[in-house]
Amino acid sequence: MKNKFETNSNSNVLFVTNQCNNRCIMCCQPPHGGDDIDVYYARNERLIKTAPKDTKEVCITGGEPTLAGDKLISLVELVRQELPNTSIHILSNGRNFQLNDYTHRLAVAGGDKLIFGIPFHSDYCGDHDLITGAKGAFNETMHGLYNLSEEGCCIELRIVINKLNYKRLPKMAEYIFKNLPFVSWVALMAMEDTGYAVKNDNTIWVEPIEYAKLLCEAVDILDQWRIPVSIYNLPLCLLPATHRKFAAQSISDWKTKYIDVCERCSNKSKCCGLFATSKKTFQGLKAI
Ligand code: SF4
Image 1 (tube, rainbow, N blue to C red):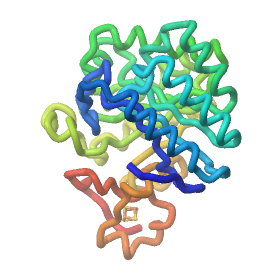
Image 2 (cartoon, rainbow, N blue to C red):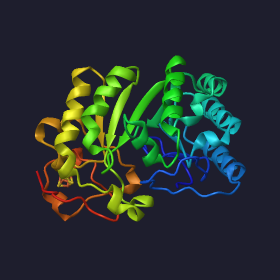
Image 3 (spheres, helix red, strand yellow):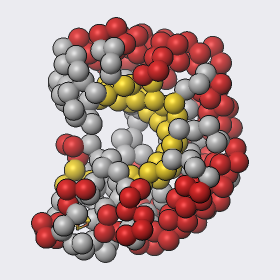
């Protein structure tokens, strides 16, 4: 974690807590207990007060940030007060947004600067709950998504592609346009091979070359229904030329790495590269 913010960085992070009410099978930052909310709040207060006034974006994350309860609302209010032009990207599993009053108060605090990044692991509730390690998580997150929509919030729906959900990607795309057409965009994301992903490698790891075709099908379905869609964390050389326009430079600057073959690649400046934090390197990388 950085100790000060930079104007154009994509890694200005307000870390709220290590605690989480999910146990996602591929979590890159496994949660642990302990009463850490006040300690992190004090640190975040300092970061916000010393941040450049033209900071483009801050990301509020954890653990699960909503476990901080009203302290999360205070944090958002403080960002709005000190950095009124800064976007606030909250990464949450969305379950606590099933609470109408809490969701309303948070939405009011953040106004039009809030973006909610909410994971959606499957259109089948059993798979979503299995991936999150929390029974009932699918229903709670869906309820949360509808509450956020009711508040007019900007929602980024995040799908982390793994062995348990990649075969359903086109079905998930269809489910989204039928049931969640209000989301602002969908991010289809390659997995970071760290934390629980390493521990559960046999259950969840799948190479992008195995899922690229289904990923492109899902992208086409969403695009056809005019739901904005992006591909995160996937190097351009693992996508067909037709779908590279959907790829975003999504990896935080401090986590990005390129390998030898990238030095000969004409697309390096447009490519997100690889996670420096991942244990494995994707198969099939080649200079374009
Ligand atoms: S070779 Fe490297 S820079 Fe080029 S597309 Fe692949 S990962 Fe990106």
